[in-house]
Length: 175
Image 1 (tube, rainbow, N blue to C red):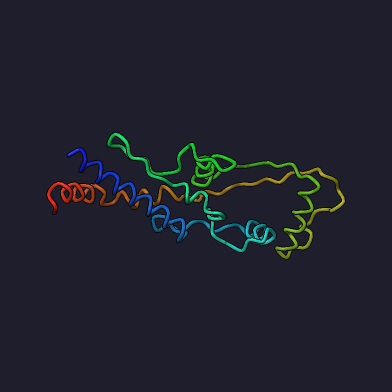
Image 2 (image 1 turned 30 degrees about the vertical axis):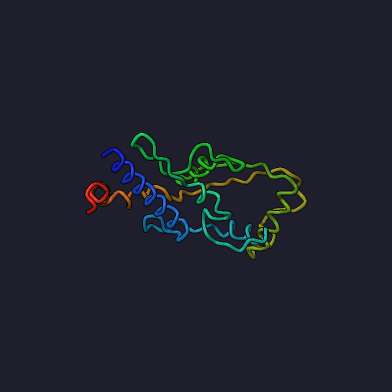
């Protein structure tokens, strides 16, 4: 019985993982569209030579970090705390799931040049600032919520009991 429960639990967890991964790929986890990227983010990507426009998928590190751990008849599906890519991917997942900010960044001369290029890429000229004004000033960034875990969990939860019992019955009785 324990082996059948473990198999059913593992199958459910892997199914949920697949739902999350597919939701990120399709930009609609659980059927709810992910908020599109801001025009400034898309322009910054173009300046960096990257043409992609999908949110949360620049290099797919976050999507690829979603994993399943089954132990002692319990399952974890998500981004493990130990997954690090520069910054903890679990922290990045949390910032995107719930939103984050404001983040206040002091503007350096190099950043000022980048921002002017970014505004030109957007078609806005110099962005309204004065180019020769030194390195003073700040940029305030808000990361809007882009839930990708909760919508998939909510969708997967529907019918979970029936699927789970059907999996156990199939394993025990070959039904």
